Length: 470
Image 1 (spheres, rainbow, N blue to C red):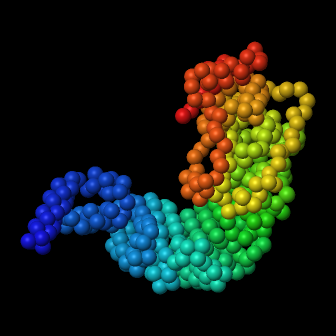
Image 2 (tube, one colour; image 1 turned 120 degrees about the horizontal axis):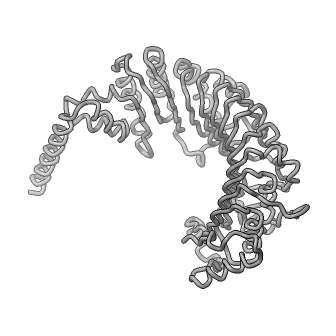
Image 3 (spheres, rainbow, N blue to C red; image 1 turned 180 degrees about the vertical axis):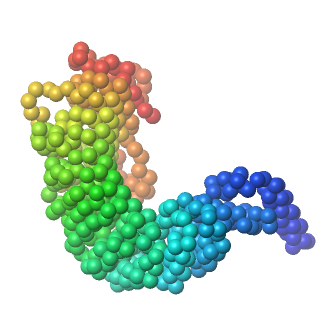
C-alpha cells in the first residue's frame, strides 16, 4: 500500500510539473528568456525539460552561467563538458553571448573538452565576456607540496592545449597551484583579453617574484601564496586586493598603475617591520578607496608626516581600517585625515579575535602606535561621515571622536556600533574571559555621552549627528 501511495504521489508531481511547463510554454520567447536568465543556466535547463516547446531556449540565452557548487562540482564535471559543448555548438552564430561563466574541476580530460568547446565558440560566435573559475580536486588544507606542483603543471598544459579559449578569456580564477618560473608570464601572454585575475594559494615557489605586466587587466586579487614580492605594471588596473603576504620586505610594488583607484590590503603583521604608505603609493596617486585589515593583530602601517603624504593622497575619498586590536589606541589614524583632505567617509572597526591561528601567540607583542599631532589643530572640510564598529565608552574612543569632530567642520553623521560578534571565537573558546561591553544602552547613557563630546567646544557639530546603531 505504501508503494502504491508513493507511485500516486509521483504521478501527481509529474502532472503538476507538466502543467507548469504547459503554462510557461505559452509565454513569448523573449519573456521566457528574460525569466530563464535570472535563475541561472542549470535551473533554466531543468525548467526547459518540462516542455518540448522550450527545449531550444537554452541555446538562445545571452548569458550562460554554469557554476555548480559543493558535491555537484565533482559529480557534474564530466556531464558539464558535454553540456557546454551541446549548448555552444547548437547556437546560432548570429546570437551574441554577452557572458559565459563556467566553474569546473581541474581534471585533464574534462578541462580539455571544455576548453575546445569554448575556443570553437570564440572562433565562430560573438562572445563579449568569458570567465573560468577552476577548482582543484582537493582543498588546500589537504594539499601536499607535490599536489600544488601537479595542479600547476596540469593547468599550464591546459592553457597550452586550449590557447584559443584562453586568448579570449576575460576573467580567470585559480586556486592551489604552484607554477614554474615562466608559467605565469606565459599564461598572461596567452590571455590577451584578460581583465580580472584571482589567485588563491597560488605562487611560483617560496619567496618567488610575481611580475604582472598586462595591458588589459582591470582587477587583481591575490590571497595567500608564497610570493616575496608582487610587482604590477598594468596601465588599466583599477582594483587590487592582496591578502596575507608572507614577507614584509616590499610585499607589493606598484609600478605603472596610473588608473588604480581601489586598494585593499589585509595581513596579520607578525613581524616588527611596517609598511610606509609614501613608498607603497608613490606611483599610484589616483587611489580613492583604501581598505586596510589588521586581523586584530599588530598595526603594520607606519604613521607619516602629512606633508609627505599629501601629494599622494589627494584623490583619497574612502578609508576603511578594519579589525584594529582592542588594546591599541586609535589616535594614530588621524594622520590619514591630516594627509588626505578629500576623504569623505572614514570607517574604523575595532575587535579582538581569538580564533586566528596566530592570535594567541602574538597577543603580548601588540603595542600602541606612537603618533603625535604636529603643528596647530587642522580643519578637514570634506569628511561627512565617521563610522566606528566596536565602540566603547572609554577615553580611547571619547578622545578620538572629539578630535575628529573638532577637525571635521562639516561632518553630518557619526555612527557608533557595539562590538561585532564572532561566532567562531565563541565556539573555539567558550570559556574565554570576555571584556564586558560599555556600549551605551539607555537613552540617558547616550545623551550623556553626546554631551560629554560636544560640550568641550562651541565650534563642534551638533550632538544630533552622533547616532548609536543597534
